[in-house]
Image 1: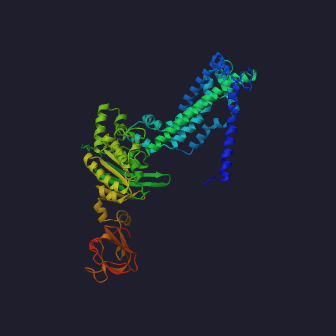
Image 2: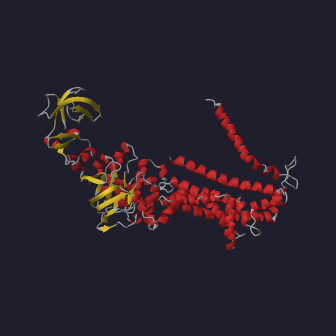
Image 3: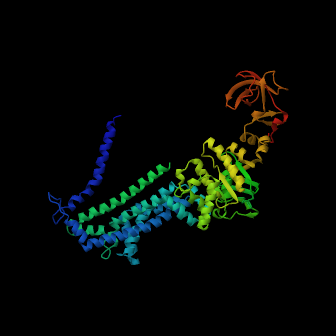
Length: 267
Length: 333
């Protein structure tokens, strides 16, 4: 059967939407290859000099390391908190469960600029402004709801009889959690950790408000780079940033595919 | 492998309410150690709720559960030491068969060598010696069912609870597994409490059957007692098939295979009812005749197919007869 006109339009529309979403980000790639000293499209000549600057400049390298540390810590904290939250909400079934869940998802819904102001007001008196703990704390608050969502999705497919079976066989609840529940919801936990990492890795709004000199994350250095001069190193950094994010998603997709194949094999 | 030093259960006034709904209503029941007791009833009869209370997964609204004389009402599920075979088996999908079977001993911190030896013993009991390193997903339904059984028996529980364990198997396999279950029950001597809605399973395996309806015990007895002397219309209709005859002194239950059927005027002894055959269905081993009798519900008569000397036809006038003891008078109106 030949696809109808509507189906064709649909496919064309999907590709247009995809290009519309992706192209602006991809502009960074040619720009990062310009031989000039300012942001520009290369004309026939290409150069990796800005990547060289990026990977040799102590400032840029330090920003990479700082972003990495903050994102990894955020992923760890948010994943632990979000997973515990999700399991707690899953186990306690009361009419307030959904209210609590909605409340926990608030950080996702509240405009980031407002979160940023709130964090600023909160962290100043605590002496955590412009510090690793301050940034990690703020990013964790933003990222935990993502973990809550992915882990809850995994739990929705988890057979509660497995938990009963484990208890029936004499396992205390923490053993049941470690040996039965966690292995079963691992896909959701891993996805949550990746999302949390990515969120922190390219977070800028809140970071601008609560960091100053000591902590200088990668997105922040890029922002300053664009504002203060038009150094194409920013474009090179953007390419690396996109690369890392893509890598995280590829890992996630591969894991999901392996899981699907295993599920099919087990049928 | 006689491990039945304990395992007698007493339920006294056991009740479970969900909001305003009474799911289990004031049940008193003595379960002997080593007994194979079946809770039989339609869905919503409270049989699974009762089992879940015994397992410790549901709180008790009123009453008590005693194990060998001691109340276990406040003992959490993980400390009750009751084995359980779940509906759908609930095997841990990420563990091998051996890890599943050995789980209970493992979480009790028993030495590796003891666990391995016991797992070997259990896999032999359910004849799965060669499947220890597979994952549950790589096993057939019947094999998974046996793994679930081995896992639940591995720690030698005094009581084994089985929640419709054969529900997911096809009919032929089910009969095979029934024999295995009976055999395993004999060998381990554990008290089995078996929940099902399948009357054939109940009849073929149980020492005693509890017929449940609306959260109450409708009737309790051995399979023979229940089949031969049902006390209520529900018991007579749920366990086996029954015709119900409203006579002057009450309602009688009459099993279809206990009725004699012959062309009008040719029956042995006195004809009790006369009618015409409205439908004949052939089942291989037997034929089912529906006989329309004026002023009554149609009466079902089951006759062994090989004993059909008269070549009865649809629409033929027939006489029905039965022995005095075949019709059982029911308690209710």
